[in-house]
Image (cartoon, rainbow, N blue to C red; front, top):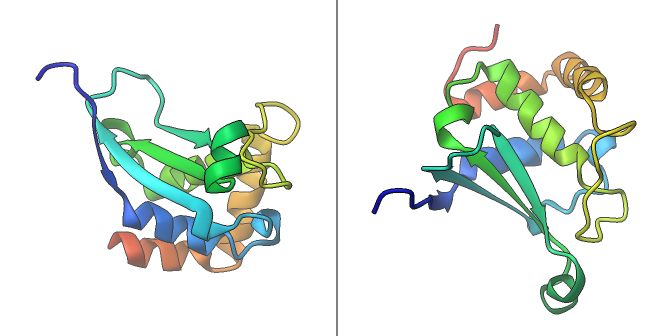
Length: 138
């Protein structure tokens, strides 16, 4: 059916989230409550999106988040850009892990993403991520 978006679990994206959550910037992220999916068929210009489970959903299911990567765009990116994309999405999760989302601004922007990416590189986390994705790092 044309125009229909398909979704499936993305365990490699969750593995990246798990590695990045070892950084102090993401110590508040409960990775057991972050779910990762890839989609096909989206007309969005986005590379990835994050959804929170606020309000009644969080009350019933507990707070959590879904990170969606748009397959047609995300998997064409370099390793660096894929990691930066996941960092960007994780920055939207507030320190309260309440199911809400931080807006773009002082805490969610390219400068902050770049700083965290460089720190992850220094910590050797990109080598772990490259191994998961089956890519050389460099």
